[in-house]
Image (cartoon, rainbow, N blue to C red; front, side, top):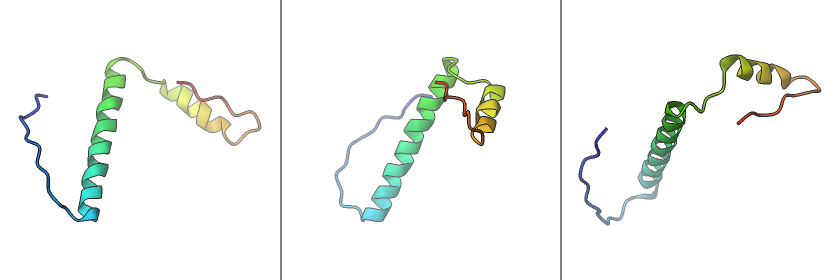
Length: 66
């Protein structure tokens, strides 16, 4: 997706709306990173995730795979 041209502005904004914008930008950044990882094939098989989750209630929990 092409990015539109932008212009930087400086303004005083109430704290709560400014924090909401910051949170939305962070969520957007994390989403883009996650999608790039998927595009690069950096995923974990669903069955492996299920096995790991199922092991959490045992005395021998499986390690987290990255």
